[in-house]
Image (cartoon, rainbow, N blue to C red; front, side, top):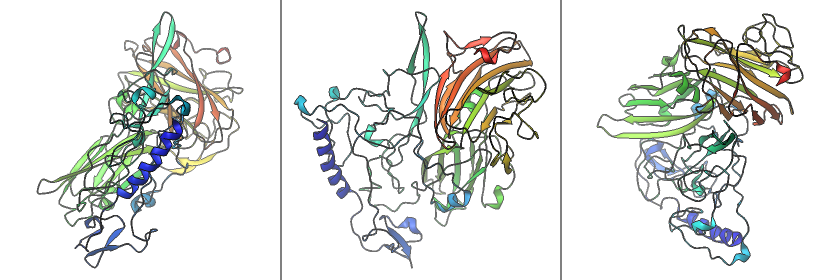
Length: 546
């Protein structure tokens, strides 16, 4: 059956590609490139003409579409090339959009049932791929829900019957499998939730959050319905370019987006711009954004600090800046409103990433009247104590007393310094490991520990310690683990952990084994789960006894 599916897929994809694209038309008057509706045309001397720099003879871009569902079981892996974009590249619009989804390999993972005699039939519910003339797929009953981050059985749920480990995360997409990462469609993230049954911990995948699903195709140079075609059948003149590539971002570094490359008309300074960022996992726990945003009419107007807000809007604010303190996968939404009331909207996924291991901590009772919680990272084979004594002994874990980024010395775990950015955006040589942010009494501030250059097989442990301050509050810490810029796990999300209540409580979170070189995004995680996360009372635990 698999071979028959591929045969039908190949036929219809060929038909689909022929059907994409605009029909030939006479030259149209234009003010900018966005006035030219046909792909491959540019505005020259007031007329739309074929772009002579195009790779294709007819000036059109040939769309490429996967014709078989995603099959890579390692949905957490990232398929970007590991290179971070620069601001200058972002402004030119030439960056490739980073794909948070995992491998883009689309080899069919279904069992080969060539001899089962089942005929492949059209099925309007679950498309194997998309074309304007219909779809080809086996009937729903022949497509079970494979554990690959996709809704293979088209019941609106992703991997609902697949086992998972407490706190584990994976990229997910609840649309039709063939639409995954086609056009504007983009993956979300789902987290493994754990519940107890008869003393046994059982994991089940939660809701797929933050994904971008197919929508009605709009006149915006983007493939909104994720079928491989752009603005097909609309015969329109796009006023906005939602296909603009915004690239990726780095923690602690200003990310600037030039809106005039997205909307190029002469009334740019008169329209109202609304820039909105989604909140990251720690922003939700903290109750405020950990990133800052700013918008202005000119690039010069972006100088200075932004504000801790997820929405910036105003007339003429075509320039946008965001500065992230934490890694993560964010969604940027742009809405432009013209003076006549017309509105145009775009949405992109923006990945904030950095090489190596990043461990991030946030909790819901930060501030002077709240509690002080500390993050600790140890390395197996080197660390012998978590660090409850005030010195910088090398055999201690990395924590606030001995590991802050601006200290002259820190734990010697055998790693060289690397060039990176500190929490204030200054570039220089940084120690590994290092604690970039420490929160004692500041409201709405996270902590994090970074190690840019882990090596194959290195193994680490993470512990959270309630140090002191208001002990009348029960506090709920959350720890996010990023490997190579990809979120691998979120620990502490209810109902996994009920929370700390007493001073000196310690939470043994997870053991991390690094897989690959420093630029890898693969790691093996073993959470400390034994009928609930282990919380030690009144003393830091023995590191060697873990």
